[in-house]
Length: 302
Image 1 (cartoon, rainbow, N blue to C red):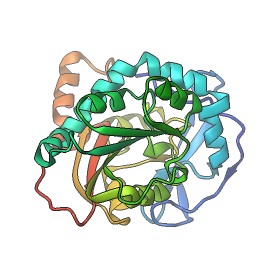
Image 2 (image 1 turned 90 degrees about the vertical axis):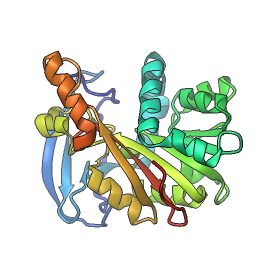
Image 3 (image 1 turned 180 degrees about the horizontal axis):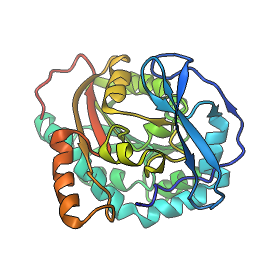
């Protein structure tokens, strides 16, 4: 079985029942319970539920925003920075491939944005993607909840604000592109987050969202042992629920691509190669990226 994604250890945080971020419902059915096998080795457990109205999978009751912020700050912020630094090159390569699949580089060419475009990376980690885009000619800014990671980005000469994007007071319609890679599943309120992204995007702006796909092959096979079913992932989206969240807040999902059939070590090389090749055309990949546009934009980008 593949190792799960890095996560902060399960703690005794007090949870409270919150309405479903997608539909506002308050009726949930059990989905699965996970036992921690991460850094703490505590064997503690946490559970996911499924909204009876819209089907969104989530941890509910949910820890408070203050508890979430503490995970990435004074509690485990330094550990998370070390993890991101150790994997920076691999993560950047995956981000570049995802953006290519979602047509980001075609957008650059079509709109001639690198020389004049402004991009915001929310959850920018070590700033590796910001540096790459800056080298391509973009004006780049970042937001990072984790204090240690935000300070690290600043030490690399990047314009990065520490905190939640809703607290940053960006001007309306000020970015051509907003990126959020492996972020939305960590948030207490993805709906509020999507509203804020809409507010700060320019007309015809694009929003690129990358997140695990709970309707992918690996999630269906492994359920509570799925590598993305971790304590830090408060929401587990499918292509359907992610599209619904974006569209009900005024975006149009132009393109959704999934990838990753099976993680390394889960099957013989030949089988893994076949499943990886089929994950994109068949839509059962482990991770997905959605390119969404505001309704004022014209379509046609590929």
